[in-house]
Amino acid sequence: MLKGGCLCGAVRYQADGKPMGQAICHCRNCQKQGGSAFSVLISVDSSQLTVTGEPKLFLDHGDSGAPVHRHFCGTCGSPLFSILPANPALTHIKAGTLDDPSIMMPRVHVWCDSAWSSTLIADNAIRIPRNPPG
Image (cartoon, rainbow, N blue to C red; front, side, top):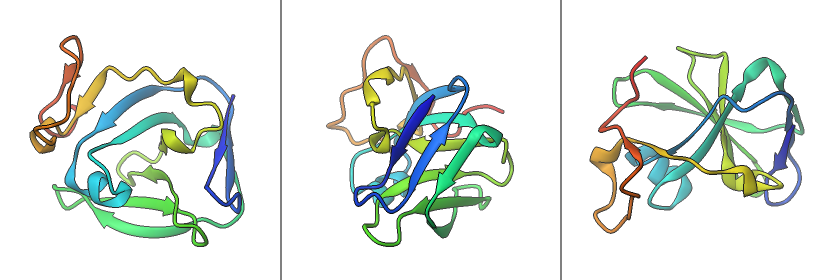
């Protein structure tokens, strides 16, 4: 089970079941949303996610023009998770909001074409230039 929430505690979440994936995204929108070089994500089955509090929604669009629903705390501004309407079965949680991020060991890096040149990516990492396949 994963638990987490925003900086101020107004929004909390819990995800039952096993995470379905971990990745680091270097796309420009994740960089801008997080104010950093990349976003660390853990993907869960959306049907197993319970949210308390009222996250706000920002309707973003990916490079393809497809919508990306970015959820964040309206009080403290913490980015919490993203959902792609093209695949609503998955919710991509911002790993920095986990109560215990020690389970994070992402080896997949996506949108590497947008990665900062100063960002070190491990030699054994899986590097995907843009969107992951499928």
